[in-house]
Image 1: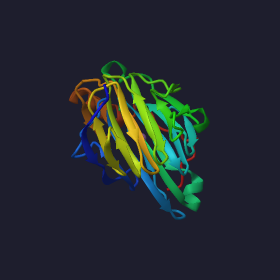
Image 2 (image 1 turned 180 degrees about the vertical axis):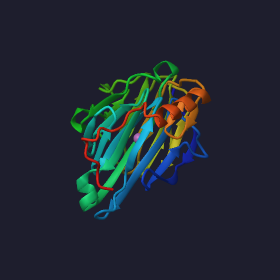
Image 3 (image 1 turned 90 degrees about the vertical axis):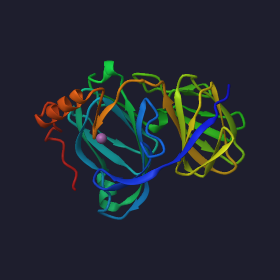
Length: 291
Ligand code: CO
């Protein structure tokens, strides 16, 4: 059975971190959540001049995962577990905050110094109750290691960040079944995508217009799909979209800023643990990026 579009919602804009603009398809007035996915932010595309680029200075997370996927620019990160790294276009960082990390996510020193285009996504993936206090974990996958596949007509290509598509399987491990695809369409593309029937699934278009189950979905819109084992995607022009979703957790969500737990008590505990330094801090030998 093919999936059909249940609703189409438009992303709103807001400022995040140190003051960078994002488009946020959810949570939004039109779409609260896509359980088990909590939030999707599209950063940019923005063209920074020298000394203009801003990021997200030191902040904590607990109870879920942050997934960063960069399309343009360069990002650096550092965290309280001692991890550091640089993300380049096409790279994915899948960070399981679990019991708690403090990290910073900044444009690279080169982008801060010289400016340049920055474009990317951050997705928040909820963890089930049983895994919320798991040990923090990083999966950093360079662009060349993200599995790719091509449709039969050769006009649709996909990068498989999580889940499966067209016979390609993701290399990233997830705590519960998650699907995250980056689709690129050439004019006239048509493709059927197999999906697990029990997954909540959305398609967020960020370039051009994509036909999702026969409906036109434009740049900045997300289509939420009904149940089914397959989805028809297509395009009349050049277009790009993220297909994202997963098996719903169906657990209570208590969400306060950077903490996502099941109960208000657990949120209070997270705030206490953070304030009292139990989530650690970024080691001082890691050089602070210039503001
Ligand atoms: Co963060």
